[in-house]
Image 1 (cartoon, helix red, strand yellow):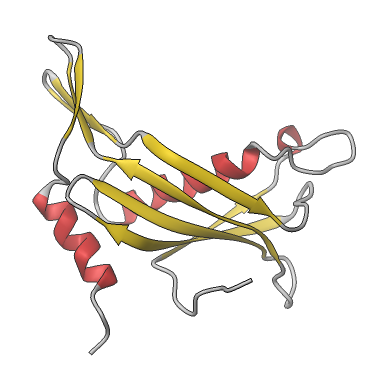
Image 2 (cartoon, rainbow, N blue to C red):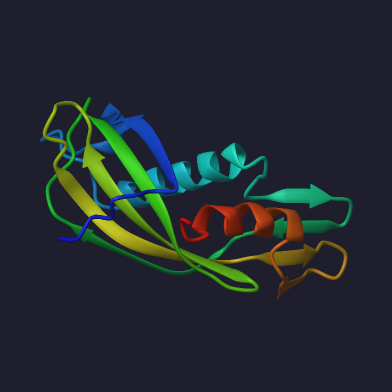
Length: 151
């Protein structure tokens, strides 16, 4: 399993009891919640939000595609580190890879890996229409600066 040497964002999270089954193992769907939580923290770290509302216009990032390969179970009270890496940045969309590690010990086993593809949209609240929209220039500049090749 290839793990990149560099991530654009890292986010830690403790597995809570409500995330698990009777055996104390995290339900598979919660891995997506962990990645989404990391994604929101990533946007905040750049000075932006995943969802914004300005008068009648709302902007957001719905999913186009998600996938996850589960390698090992996550367990109750385990500290996880969700790492994000931008894989592709287009005019209206963004695809990033994610890697979820157990961060309790020195070994840091990889528990899951996958991809999220998201698209920037605007919702006109009056017309109730949703349409793709270019990534705002200031956010685009921040994202571009993260993925620029090292000199």
